[in-house]
Image (cartoon, rainbow, N blue to C red; front, side, top):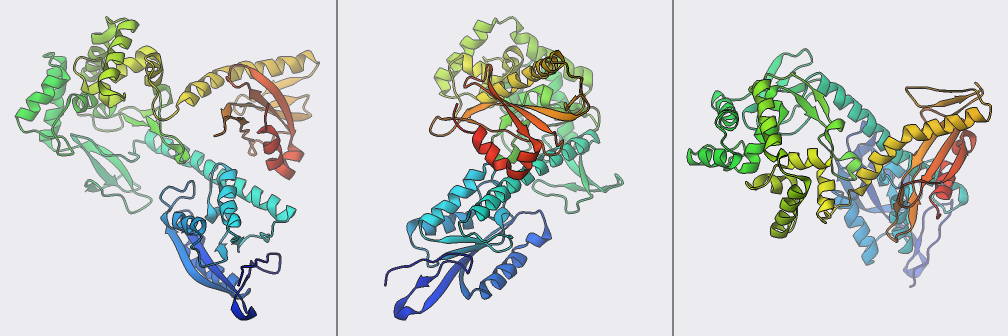
Length: 504
């Protein structure tokens, strides 16, 4: 018999089966990251089963992702299997029951979660969020609430990311290590909340108590002596990285990973500030699992002298000057010619590829000379697989922001307003009657090459008016301006987003 779907506030879709007997078969999807115990998969499944029993729904299948982030589909194998079953038409259920919208996903783009639900709807499978206060029945009210919930789920992750990053920065400044291997000549030491030593962590081991911390300490004396010897050979005897690597390999000395030394691994020892006791964080960031970004030094978080140094600062700085001086005599054109020649040989470029070449200046030279490796890549006509143009655009927009604020303030004062600016928040107070926040929106593109602007509204500051400035498609100059009252934003932030994200 053909399939007939009914949906509405009375319950989920039902499937008419042989003999006129109605039954509803459902798949339960549960996901837990590490945020709250109330989101444990057992608690979710108990609520889902209670929801199903009240509506005569039979749970025929459970898809479970335990310990998985909802920021993307990556790593969520069960959810991907669920979607595959739906799209292939092999699903033996008519309904998907999820605890709430955030368990479906905390996507930074709310449209992503909506698209995944649409794939289910297209296959005549209804998604129900059993712990939400709305019925997912397609009504205007439920659609609005669902959109707001999706935005809130994504915003929760963004705010949490900001708080976690701030907490990590504070721990860095206190001298605690934040992830990553110790490196050759160093070891990770576990300490308790009072700083008392507990145990040395082996490769792959992690702390088990939240109050414990990790610091770096000198490793075995033979490794420490190898590190110091590397610096002496380089600084005092003028032996280059490749020569040092060859000498260590002849002696049977291996890296901390048990591998032979290379020019690149020697260069990393000579340029890493942890050997002089500095704790450096945010050299590379991967926030919200969106893009891996190699940050410039002004964005590093650095605490000096918080670890026991195994190389003195003077020697380290002499090594840094040698690295810089040996290419200072090369002009920009000569540096780019070498980089272009390397590209022709290798077919691709990276910091490690550059550092491995004995006849090339180090990657740090290109960073210092051209501002970033990405700009050097651009000058030789190389585009990495990832599009990093947004880094330069964001840097330019940040530099432009003070001028934008000054322009707005001057305009208000010219009009007769009494204006003052909070130096910490950037919030503009006008006549003591209302506050305004200025937001500059970078122009991006959709997959169809249509322009798109995302406006992040700062609910924490709660300005009475947000002045949203949309940049043109080249992100060179302002395109237009929007005034967003707080009252309207509170009622329907997503509607304002849709208006602003539209075409030119």
